[in-house]
Image (cartoon, rainbow, N blue to C red; front, side, top):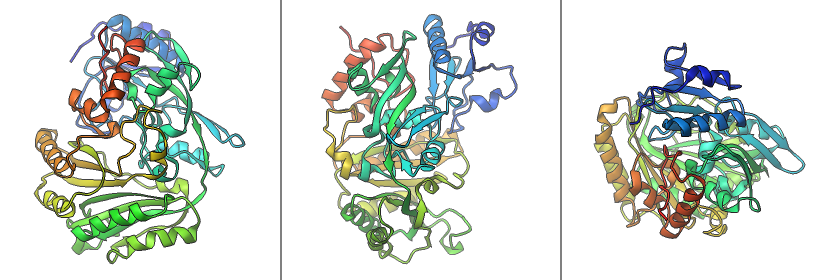
Length: 458
């Protein structure tokens, strides 16, 4: 890792509207940690920027000093990209304002706002943008990677609702980008991650979504239930999106004691439409087995993000694969792997895709694989970083077994897989185009703590 002992902290403080947290300051240990607590890195400075001018100054400083620059929205990267050993962390969490135009059905959101807070704010107007499935994820991070959440089948990826952006590029300049202004950069931002600059604000399209049928349904896991759930979710109307975790039952109060530690399917779902039609759509999933817990009911959409998220794990040795469907024997394969994992929380997460996501042309954004019908997101979360290699190998083995011969992946759920991960996330033609945009806007690869697209050589 690069170290930068000569970052002028006093000068940085004097020129910023936000706050600088240095190693000797109170609160440093809390501020330096990201979501996965096993990344025990010590930045030279953590800068909680207040506005775009702060972002420009931090970017200029990193460029001029050669400091490693980590850009943090929510800090949920599996690879710990939101922190640095000896570099500068540009923390966007204080940039969390949202401006809503209810009549025009659009919103400008600063990229430090979380998915939960954004959805709560837009929900006050009966409006929503599809984000992820976790309240604490930063809007900037999830959007730039693509965004696959509870509205993916009804309204597509998060990037499909991005209408414009404000971006600080590697030269410290603040650009306004959209389909007509810097269209190449606008294309790359939508799926290319943080490779091209720091997005400080994003303009989103909003949809009329107020009351939905949603919540969590827990079923005992069997091969038949796993396969049946995917089939039922695929056959359901596009208003229904399902995110199902096949895992070992946690010792929660609503889980029968005799089920603790046994395989279960925890399916979170949203039907974005009429309540009666939603109940009909979900009925085939309920009928797969006698539910162990059934919390699916008519709710206001923001409620899907409410409730505790649980303790933060030290590591997640996971990966993902985008496939056309479950291969023969997939249910048995998942259950067999769960039995062999030594991780505290092993899981195979199944996200049924299709619908609106597939109707956007492949070359309209930098997202690589719109035709995929299913995402398998394998997680191996644990409190022991030392066991990371073992859990990573387990996750890779399960993902390979379920891959149906494809290496395609969603960039937002990759770990630190290097160049191989980048090549999994983007088809060759998409990656070539991203290379060219990278060379134009970040030729020296200042923004490299990400699934890095290295600048193409002349």
